[in-house]
Amino acid sequence: MRKMGIGVQLYTLRNETAADFAGTLRKVAELGYEGVEFAGYGDLSADEMKALLEETGLKAIGAHVSLDAMRNDLQGQIDYLKTIGAGYMICPWVSEEARNLEDWKNNIAFWKETAEEVTKQGLVFGYHNHDFEFHESIDGQFVFDAIYAAAPQSIKVEMDVCWVKFAGQDPIAYINKYAGNLPLLHLKDFARDENGGMITLELGQGEVNLGEVVKAASDAGVEWLIVEQDNCQNPPLASIANSLNWVKQNYLALV
Image 1 (spheres, rainbow, N blue to C red):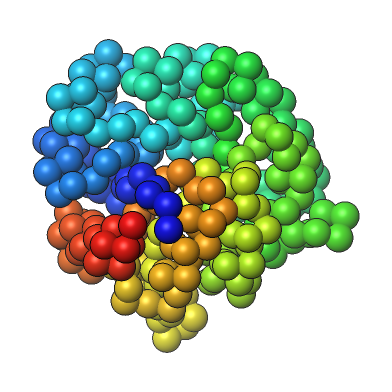
Image 2: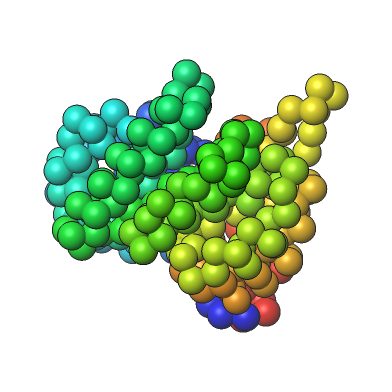
């Protein structure tokens, strides 16, 4: 297998970064993570964040940027990412009221336009899925597929395999389908509660066949495996440490 970068999505540590952003990033680096994907920057300026990343040795993979921020402050978001040395701007979420056919089509057109501008300025635009992109179709294909079909050269896939599996789809088949256009992959695991809802778990504890996911990701040209756990049963820093241990034992030991 190829060597892929190992990062963490900082949404997992949202309470920790809210209390002490710099201290949390230092702890992430001490655990052995190579990079971070941002979900907000606290109150740090781009220059302050750049200095913190240089201090810790962490790579800025990219950031989850809301639709509102893209619409209202696209250039500011681009400038921040470029200052901290990040490569990716990712749209992470669509509100429930915007998950209708007309809004999906409008948003896809907006993402195509945004991706062109982001690409022009030297960054990469991507979309991060949940399960709801598999609940609706556009012209006979899932919304998930329609998003990337609209601009296959400029909208890249950040696949969350946990949500793909939860939606009843095959993560391996989807990784293979988007090989070459899938630079970022969220490495997550889950179980189902008594009502069928998702309980996010540390890696290796749930339903996702993560060993096969990692092999497929390597073959598909993924650049970064990004650990994420939406809600943790243990203190989040302990959870990401345990998940990194899974990565070391089940992937890095084999590279």
